[in-house]
Image 1: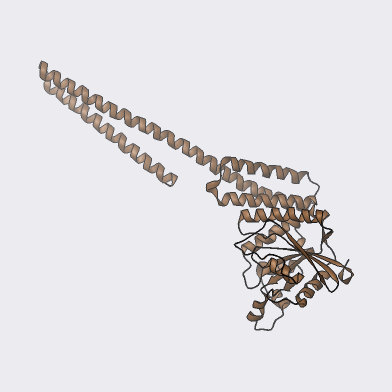
Image 2: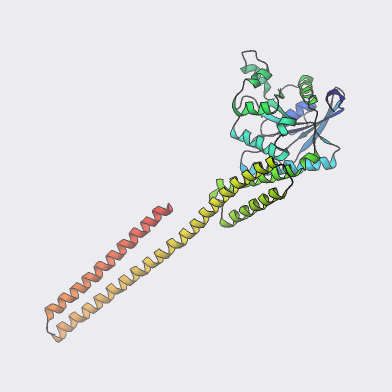
Length: 374
């Protein structure tokens, strides 16, 4: 159903925490009902829903959970959003979403974090979700009028952009709407309604539950988990790596056994292969580290033993030499000079040997400390 034939319109707002998603929801419904959140307060534990009437049409707005900046925030936000969307379909009479509105902030660079948020939305709702149902809502529209001196329209400004943001705009078919959440008027609502009215399809629960979407969500969450583990290697251990590797192998098996398109299978398999290589490299590094620690301790133990033996031999040499000297003095044995000379040689040899062993052990410890980075 297209355009004015619709009596109801369902919108899902998604995007990074702090981009003005909740404020945009308030502007659409014309009331201050959605709680505002900041980038430092990513309250991603619930999904809010409110409705309004715009020109006789029922408009239902769902404020999805915010997508954070770190791997852990992204995983938590994505999982919460996925569970919440399922719950909305179960307890609300919402057949599908007529548009998935991706909220960005005007005047801010399109960073890697924004790209990650785009990929998160694609992984949750399908690789072609922006092409078929995506709308870009650009907040802080008051800054656009202040910064623009060439009298360009917002659509012309979007078409003049470059890089990843332009790619996203092209993917959405330049369905972009500028929002100034500091003022409340019906024109912003009507402009968004007009854009959404031109989109014939709605995103349904059946599409959300397609095997392709389920597997894509699983692969995405695995990738974020791997990234989070690698970023904090000091917290990783062999057991964590082995569990991750098991998950990846299991997911790869699910992809190969599922009835999905060959293109999707190739794309997901390629992602999983990359994850498997990263985890395998980390696992090898962890095993090598534990082996290195073991082999390092063993030579150190042997070196300590050699040092002890050297000291014992030196002490015994001194005792033997003193005994020989006493016998020579007391009993006036023959070849006194020869015996004294031999005793001196024995003492000097034992002493030199002990010093040599001590130096080698010290040098060994210094070398190993350098290798270990101490």
